[in-house]
Image (tube, rainbow, N blue to C red; front, side, top):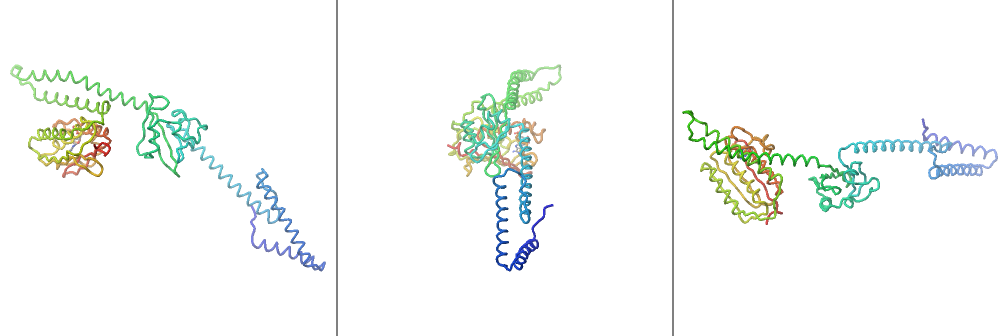
Length: 426
Ligand code: ADP
């Protein structure tokens, strides 16, 4: 246990020195001189201790302080104690850092810590493997000097990291890398890069499989439909042939195959040209004619179309999205008013369909755009629904940098809308 210096100890020690000076002064009859000599001796002694302390602090490499005496012993021991504490704390920090690095090495992704200028502060082994970084040689190098793809550089400069960035690897074109950047602390960034090649290959295989199966089903279905039609009016030894349900089912299957094919094409996204101008006037004319034919006069349809709002995009996709939303409003609401708007808003050009139907329970809304998701399967099938309509809408809209918004209240109706961003408004 270290001793501490108290006021009492200090007072005792000073009065001891002065008593000694007084005693020698009384014996020699030189009180002033003896006091002066004692003071000089004390001063020299203290200076010597200061010199030893400074030597130990600045020049000596030993951990242990010089052995002090008197009041200096307490000072030396105090500094030693502080140093001990500091050493313990830095050991703990070093251990923590080592543990953090071990954890980061165990990550299944490449992890890179960047400073405010995107210079590399640290990276794990997978970052070296996936992104070709060299550690520690690339320490403090800017990551955009090492990965020079223009899209990657733009992504960093924009500093909007809400969405991840997916790019072909700069090391091997065939590989796909997804980058995610998370800002943290004092203007630092954690970049996580993941090899998505396998996942994307599987996704491509799935899309191709669905597209191929749908395509292959089309021909036998058409043949089957032809034979079913031939059956109509044929004699079956006086027994009725159930042609009607057969026709209905083959028709349903044909619709499903058609929709699956459309969805596959939209998902693959090949041949989509966002630069061509959509014929808004023609589009809404067709939509209105089709809606009126489907409604058969049972619904009141109101079209509020501002044809001066022109957009760039893929006509067939915009048509699919609008047509599905309008036909849903007609099919899922009975004898009500349906309002279709195409109007300018502060966020862009908004398309909306509003019906006064029976509405949708909130728990279904997040799942409506899933493939084959139907609230009431029986009713949807009877309406000719396949559960693919809103999935088609979702994918068609994603190519136009927009999303489907659904607002619905049970018993009051629903509002389906999307907003084409200003970048696509002509
Ligand atoms: P479907 O081909 O079955 O119509 P969708 O993907 O178009 O499939 O729609 C999914 C489900 O969402 C439908 O089965 C229906 O229950 C519900 N739905 C879609 N639009 C509306 C609407 N306007 N009002 C009420 N329910 C709707």
